[in-house]
Amino acid sequence: MWASRKFQGFTIVELLIVIVVIAILAAITIVSYTGIQERARISAAQAFAAQIKHSPDMLDATGVFAFDECSGTTVNDSSGKGNTGTIAGTVSWSTDTPTGSGCSLSFNGTNTHVNTAAEIGASFYIKSAWVKVADCGATNNIISGPGSAFYSCNLRSGHNGSWTQVATGSERLGDNKWHHVMSKYENGTLSIYIDGEEIDSASVATPNTLTNQIGVLNSQNNRFSGLIDDVVIIGR
Image (cartoon, rainbow, N blue to C red; front, side, top):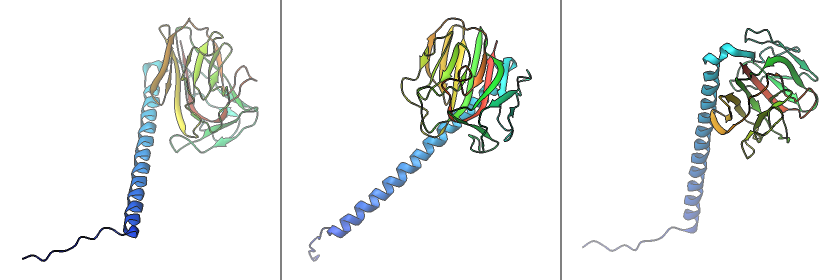
């Protein structure tokens, strides 16, 4: 005959140890999953940015600014159009970039912007850039010009004086992380993208052909605060 044994339950201390171990494992899992999500987001954004750079539309690029000078007040244009940019106001370069190499340009929200002669087109345009914003203002112009704007942590875009023809509807950029953003006009439709994902689109009027500045609207209004890198402006 087997001797009967009385089962004894866990003590309070043992239960607490089990709970702590479960909590630690859960925290590790959440952190790991969050890290995987973030890497996937960045990878998708980088792939989308590369797709723009390798598309036939680049033949119509009017300004491509890598911001890899890392010093000085001149921003080189690699589009082949010779639309060299000039930094106005406070100049501050950063080695914080979405790729981990080169430089980005820091905009103080007070007087920093880049003057360019890069134009958007009347039949097609793209404005794209990497941005990193910690403190969201109501405006934060990224790439804008007379009559056209691409701006805000609640990403918005428009032209012909209509500033908010498309918008995200909620704040998407104020998390102090790098995001790739794009505004695209084609065949009467204006669309905005964040990290390769189309967020909003609308049927709009034909835009005027206009030059653009980086980090400001009309040289003095609604300035950007944060980091900008790898700007591409296409127009035809």
